[in-house]
Image 1 (spheres, rainbow, N blue to C red):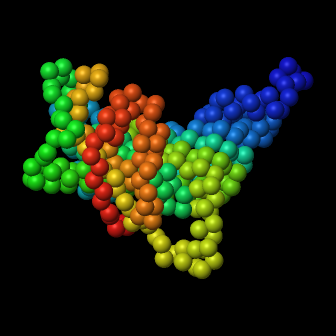
Image 2 (cartoon, rainbow, N blue to C red):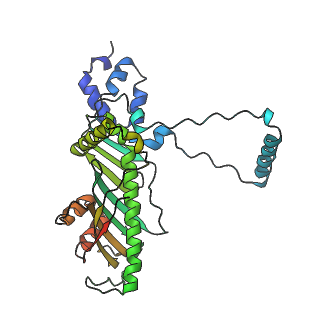
Image 3 (tube, rainbow, N blue to C red):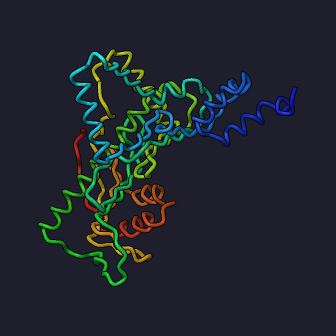
Length: 324
């Protein structure tokens, strides 16, 4: 018996909780029988899907004239002499988050990090969002802008500045597109976690974010319970096969939208077409806690937090959007 064997199990589990990374913990399971049993009892995990699924970029092919010649030459041989070419191995199906975490049965807090963001935007534009889900969308806060520059001499748009009709309509179209992109990204991430939420009833908090920190989906214990109960009712009625989707349906929503054609921050950064959108299901008629939701979502981010504080002072436009 060595010194490590004398360490109590609960101390080892505390150490493994500090590790958190699922890839590392899976490797720990192969060290010994004791590690195999204890690693799966970690309750705070970080699941980096690009690491686990092996979505690493392959090395770029050399692009010299000689290399290009030989690549085309061997491709030609393959085309005319297929009998000598080896059959390609079928690509392995990537594991789902639920399959990866199948052995872990005491998860309380789970952070899932995706490879990259979802929104396809024009160059220079940025959209950052946070969405809370239960059965479906509960709320979302979106901050976006067309460009960011440092210009000490720029003049901020007055709070009560009046835009022309054409300026307002053109800007509104852009703001709606940003909002739809963010909601579609959020609902796709929520759908990706469906099996994980159903199988791990012990979870208290689930956070799904991307490496670029573009957007975050959050589910708390009550939201996950609501989701599981809804899915159970659907399965009982035999409607599961009818709902083949790649994302969760976004319900009818009410969008509380504020914007500034040019917003100058204290740091000297100027945001063009700065926009703040607070989204709730249409059944929630009160907009009283816009400020609370927005500040909570971006309090830890200096630039975005400052932009939110300034945009909350702007005039609010309310729009309704049907489910999609």
